[in-house]
Length: 632
Ligand code: WTA
Image (cartoon, rainbow, N blue to C red):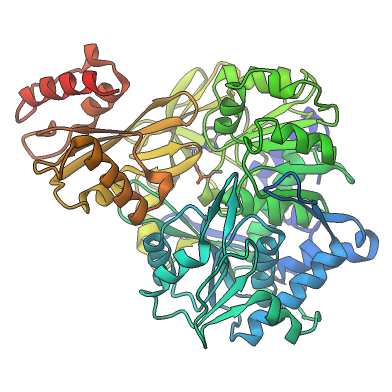
């Protein structure tokens, strides 16, 4: 199923459009099924109701583990690089990983977990995180991994939304020179989570933690009570595999649901093709498993293909900004898949950190999460790839399950900051505000997908209507991505960014409404409005306009108080970069905040504010502009 020439790409693409069921049916033959499907696809984008590989039975962990044992059991599945460069890295072969997953799967069963139960995972980037994820899949439990940067309240909201029965965590996590008390955060969260019966705690940093009798158990003790034989649960192709929460333009984060069969096929197919993975190569994705990139391209995609996947606990700048380059040299990494924000951050240190580093093993480079600017693209290409490694700028989303628009390494001619062409099976279209298709090249519009693909979301947990409203109602019969996009004269796609109220801060998706709600929870705040503005490293920064008439002490201190509230309510990742106190917000006569104006002010582009005549009180704009000038 690996594409090796552009001609083949064109043929496969054509076939995938003309005869999608045959195309995906053939791709799916490369995976291991307990029972075949009777129908490849049935779909309806109105409901939406999407089923892939109907009737088929499988367990994704048999594809990620068992099927490699005979020939590749001693091949490294995971290489773990710890936060501290002084600590030894750990290699788990497929045999070892299989054994540990089975053992931990038995621990889950021993603690009452069974098929269909939801399990929350809040862990550092250690091998046990991948083991926990796979162990859930082994027994047919649905994992909901929560990124380590979220607060107790965010965790509680997510646990309650999907009624998790079990939580898997660790005492703490290392992040560069910092230590993060994960179990403490979980303890705070669990106060408000009546459905959680058990919490399994891994010892990692060995910081003191509270352990509640009857609820909390140690990972290390539990594994002693079970053996390592665990038959995989037989799953229906459309049974739920996992839930992953993601932000939208309104309301609370949604639990995006992915199912077993289609997701597996799509993650595996896209991994092997986009990165042109060759047997024996070492592949390093720097994402966190708490996000979709880690799910699909650290765990499921690479392991389903028998690849060697590097899992890194730390950050690119610890102990020095050479860390990535040291890891590449040490493990002879062939593929580096990272985010533009990391590239821009490392770029800012100049060439010093690269001196004397042997990056000759690099064959393919990848970028994901946000638009990559041309400067960062060229730096990546020249300094890291030495002009010889194709860069795959991969566009996709939590909802799409896998990469959608991207070059295929060694096959598709690349172009700086272009995600280039859709993968086989993906039918993108651009539409105008009225949903009319924009045909031809050299055009811009809203990016939609008009035909299903196996990795797409099936629903949003507990609220199918929300899935329908968010993705399938803006434009009838289309999946709407929320992204703006241009198609150039060569038919190449370039993603221009979100067209809704979702920010992309360092590749993290954050809804402006969520941040506003958090700020509004701060005592004294009357109202707030949040917009994004261009930020050199983060891509976008968060700019908050806040009405807070009765400040508690100095303004600077009050700002810090507000940051603390946001950290409590959402997590440190959502902290505004700038807070501006204002006495009013620009509103229309019907009371709608005119964000367009605030965005311009945040960008410092006050010469072109456009029409402000419909404002209730145009004077407020002048005041905000003046105040913004004074803000550092
Ligand atoms: C943005 C991450 C430009 C986009 C896999 C999308 C990108 C959102 C790219 C999804 C890219 C992701 N170029 N923009 N290569 N990749 N995005 O759900 O706005 O965390 O809608 O999934 O990130 O973010 P999510």
